[in-house]
Image (tube, rainbow, N blue to C red; front, side, top):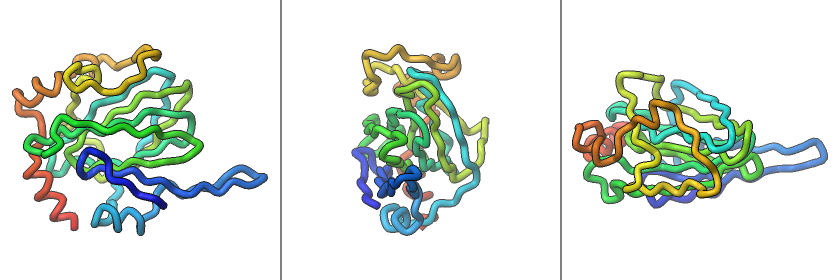
Length: 198
């Protein structure tokens, strides 16, 4: 498995080998040894999530209070999507920056984002499935969002696809509004939590 750190610190792309044959294909999107070597600790899985989206659907930008936050290991078992990691950690050297990875059911790339980072994606095809392993369970009181169409963020959504958002994501604050409201995690708190995981 090949691993690449993204432009956003503490986020990684994992590229597994795909083994096709006359029956179909086999792939292991998550491999613990490669994960531990890259990240420095094991992934605790408290919940697995699966969503199905029509073309143009944007989900995110979502993040959780840290600690404990919610790390995610995501891949696309069906269809194709543009996966975006946003650094929403106040004080981070990459605060406000993002990186994007195309995830699809051909290459089976995966993205890991550590606790405190923001996550969003857009489905590029109808009936696109997103699967992700989460380090903590769903905690509504600790979940927050940033508007994925925040012009200051300038996320790379394809211009030829009309975005479809939930009411909650449409009403989410911009990154600067969330920072002024004190909703964002701090980089120092996140680093201290990562150290505990190691």
